[in-house]
Image (cartoon, rainbow, N blue to C red; front, side, top):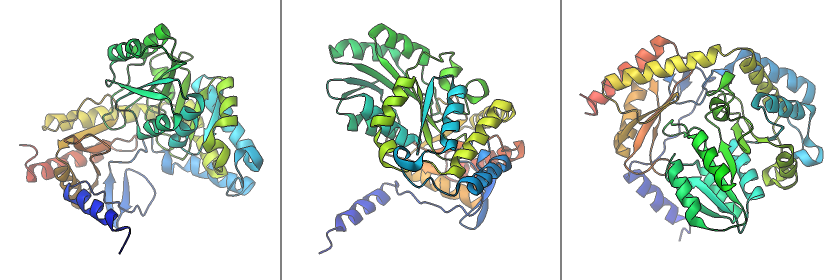
Length: 392
């Protein structure tokens, strides 16, 4: 008897619900167009907001770092794996974010896993937005603190939940800065006000705000003029920065503590020299010019406007994340397949990433898309949408 047969049953159930995730293979560098499963298609679902993933300046920086430092750090950061490049990027990110200090991690997911269980624990209360990212949810589970969910982006409900919770050792409020599936922005000024009133520690995961919001892409906290008012900022280097990694920015005390207790930092090898050097190149480009940031937002507004004009539901997005909400998971998956045959790569997303009945195509706009690219995408959405009776 196959003891793993139960997994096949689960997989069949996933397929019957239209939730099976077909993972396609990329055969060229990221860009406005790339090769997927041997077909040249328009890239409409990458997190490569600014086009940095194949930026020559970043590629050259990575090559130079390999020549100087090799391909890997060779150990965890606390033993013999901290290189001068790591320290330089941490210093540059602190300056970029306007914080005292920064610690580099292997990913944004690792940054949440390092931070939440390290600074919270039994006897604490965590107030978490109900639509927070899975990495926040997992970090809260690992913490042993009691987690209380508040209504999405609802500071009034957050205040009610804190009042109703009663006494505890410490209180923490955790929210995404930009919500990755809907593209809406957390009301950080209101959340910070609630935190001040109840003496709560505030933490913002700004994975989709870094490089997208704020002056020269400094993030959601900077976007609202709250630099220095949020205790913990989690950042990701694999989206707008175009590379790999994550970081935590805040006070020097916070960073010093995470270097002693953050398990992903302590027990997993750090970022490679090529990754770190490329990230430094991304910081250089962001500080030097916001031209790509402006192009990103121009493209986002144009595409969203055209999609709404022809009858697609783009939800409540306020950012270049543009959900095309279909509802039924099987229909969303079929729309994705139809688009691919028409030359547009845009993956469908269903449960558990989004709630049941809210399946969608999540379109990710980039600064490297031309106006012609966006028009082409809209035209193919119209063709496929009409074929599937999704629009008139």
